[in-house]
Length: 272
Image (spheres, rainbow, N blue to C red):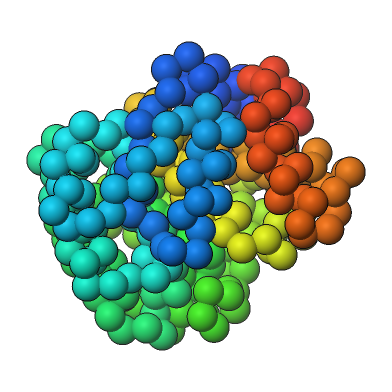
C-alpha cells in the first residue's frame, strides 16, 4: 500500500544554512538535564557553537528561562527539585513562546517520570520531543523499554510519533539506527551514525540539547531536529574512522562537532 504522507521537504542545503546561522549567532540553551550527562551535554553544545547554561534549580529555572533562546528538559534523573524546576521553566517558555525540547528518558515503566512528562506536555507543547522508539511509544500509551534501552525500532514507532506530533503540535524525533523525524505530516529519515555511539553515555541526551540549540536558531522545528540529528551523526561517522573505541571516540566526536562545516554537513548527510 502506498503512503499518502508527502516526501521530506527538508534538504541538505537547508541543514548547512541552519548550522551557519547557529555559528553566527550562538543560542543560549538552558539545560535541565540528568546528572550523568550534564558536563558532556555542555561540551557538545560548546563544541557545536551554542552556549549552554545548566540552570536547574526551582528558584532560578523559571526566571532564567525568560532569557534563554531555548530550553532542554531531560528526565534522565528526576528529583523533586528538578521536577519543580522543569515545571517552572516550561511554564515560562509557554508564556514567552520560547522553544523547548522534551527528552522523556525511560518513561513508561517508571511511573513518576512518566507523570512528569505528561504534566509538562499539558503546560505547553514542546518544539520537539526526542526519544528512542520505546520512549515515544510509551508517551503514546505503550509500556516503554528496558530502562533507557529501546526494545523497538524507529520504524515501529513512526505511527505513534506522527500521532503525538499532531496531538501536541510538535515535532517528534525517534532516534535509532536510522533516525525518523516527523511533524505528523512531513517525515525525514537520517541514515548517518555509527554503532559506537551507543557505547558512550549521553550521546542521545546530548542530541536533545543540540536539538534545543537549533530550535533557538531556526523557526522550523523539523529543520531544527533534522539539522541537529545530522550534525551529531555525521560527526560520529568521521570520528569513528580514527577512533572506534568508546573513550577515544568521545573525544574525537567533540572535535568533529567543532570542525564540521556547513558545507561538509550538506555534503555528508544522508536524508530520505
